[in-house]
Amino acid sequence: MTFINSLFNFTKSSSSFKTILWSGLVAGILDSIAGILVYYLYFELNPLQVLQFIASGIYGPTAIDGGIFMIITGTFFHFLIAYTCAIIYFFLYPKIEFLSNHKTISGLIFGLGIWVRYLVGNEFTNFTIYQYPKKSF
Image 1 (cartoon, rainbow, N blue to C red):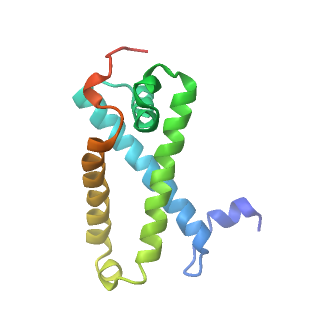
Image 2 (cartoon, helix red, strand yellow):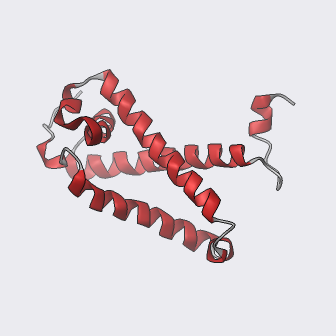
């Protein structure tokens, strides 16, 4: 079996690496979709502007005019956060019995906690959404 095929072959004995790889990827993609929809509906930002906004957490308002580099940087940071959350959840899961007994509720609470942390964390970033110039691509 090749390496690529083994990534799609899930068993009870799947590797930790594969579990974290897929969990972070799925979380990152689903969160991207949710973020793009929310920021489009409430702030009229397109997907590329959302990624620049993510990069602005580190680079400040200069990320808005940073072009493709800031879009790639925003994507990197977005998935870095998703994978960090997946790793944390992966290691907490066997240690906290509630997580394995109530999988759906636990996942929803964990996701909600990440969103709340995001909302609180905005108080400490270099940039706020309201300063973003509205422009179309």
